[in-house]
Length: 361
Image 1 (tube, rainbow, N blue to C red):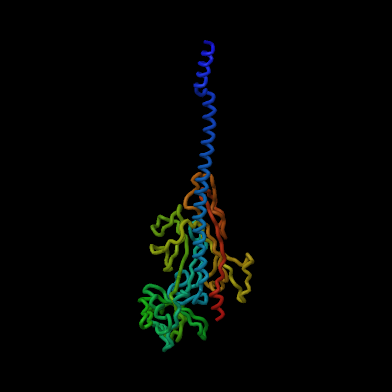
Image 2: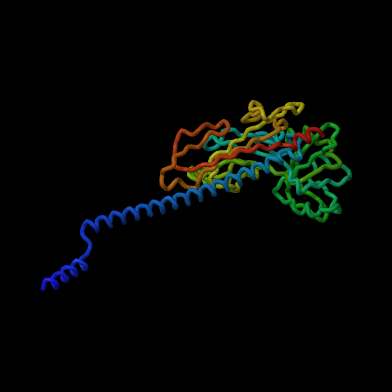
């Protein structure tokens, strides 16, 4: 009986469950494991979001600087700093149009804008060597039998701009700008233009009683303005205060519905200019050689352009742990307000060779 009782008690002990203390210890250990896994998971998600935003900003930064710098390298191609005809400094039709127009701290958040004038290097043609057309001419003729000329003329369209320059002028380098009023005629080589007579700068360069040069180098003109849109109240452009956009204006007018959105979340655009001395000896490695704006008659003296952009993330840090400010860039000071956006800044300098070369012609 005693042996049977001992066996019974041993069986009961073998079949009994966990004690309350054991359950509590197991629960605590399990909570620690779950907390560690949750912390690891949230850190991985936060890091993934951060890397995704950084990659997005990196792409937007590179794209915006690349587009601006490529256009800036062409500044002044076909001009000697200015061109006569339509438009003009500050929209004044009685003044020659500078190849570079600076607008300092005129945009949202104190951002800059810049207008760059050039001709398209891929569509350059020469006018036919015939009797020189009048300064009031409404057509110019290209020799369509010359290799590539017909194909290039076919790419000139109504509503675009035509720029021509006379590099062999006895009176000095002259550049002209007309609006095109019809598509280019590849068969005849004719380019139909609107007259530029009546503009003081054009009449000074080409008086109505005189003729244009016998042979000119021409191409489609590009008058491009880059600016930042961060206003959604005007119904123009894709930008807003929470979604600033780098815009491109191709018609040299105030911001309008046909402006092209280029890059999202560009918060600041700053442009600085290095002006070359008359002998071209300005040292652009000297910080004092750089200015934040230029006068309309200084476009031909621009030796280098420094382009800086601040790009922010498309959304704020979801964890709200990151706090940041729009950084100082060129003459635009550090923002006084903080938020939870991530930001990247990139700056590059571009040599403006075209005006320096053509000023020597």
